[in-house]
Amino acid sequence: MVLVNFIVHRNKVTEQNTYTLFLFVAFTCMFPEIYTDYQVLGASLFLLLALRRIMSMQSGKALKQKIFDASLWSCFAFLCVPQSGLFLLLVWASVYFYQPKVISNWAIPLVSVFCVYILATTVSLFSTNQFYHVAIQEVLPQFNFLNFYKWQILAGVSVLLLSFFLSLALLFKNMQKSVRNFRVSVYLLLTATLICLGMVVFSAKNNVAEILFPIIPISILGGNYLEQSRKRWKNEVLLWGLILGCFSIYFSSFLL
Image 1: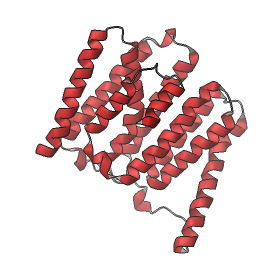
Image 2 (image 1 turned 60 degrees about the vertical axis):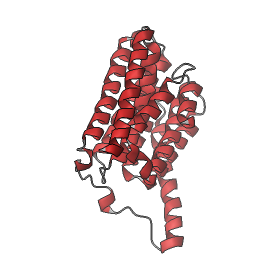
Image 3 (image 1 turned 60 degrees about the horizontal axis):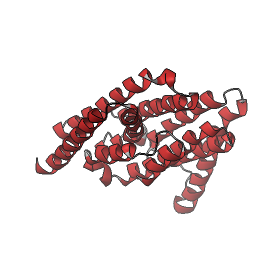
């Protein structure tokens, strides 16, 4: 939560409010299974660190270092959950938005991949006397969504997707009035959300805990939506409705 709050305030993705933090807590409460999968929690931490470096590229300073760092954190997330490697696509998207004409920038993520592979292989050789490799069953998608066929989970996913589409509708409506850095940030967050949804769909486990991946960028987009909405009464209705809905889903998962 602290890292999410730091990302949005440090990079001025939202103003000094706690909308994003509130949404993040509310969304995660709808899925208690998130807190039982330590691999997903570890991967999410690394992806948050990668997102922090990507969002900080809008300053235009030390871009190569930030590209390398974001790629490095994405690769560490891959070690926890292999599908997290898709987050490298967001690194290349940030290169496209900020400094596409510098050819070397496109190759930097590959350097990070090589560095993490060498590190993982070194640890693997010392511990198992084998080169690092990923089992094929950990990579191939299963497309088995039986764990999602519970009304609590379906209700939570519906709330999450509804928040995503509402946020996009308002943000794109006001996009022309915004400065370029803010527009790029929204595009990157949209890309991050689509990538994270892809990570859930193409997962080898298809457990509910992986819904944490798209919760992060959707919370930031939702914070922007609430911030730019001029009707404060509407915000209060949405927030109270979200509180009641989230806690109803949370407690019903234990009672039913």
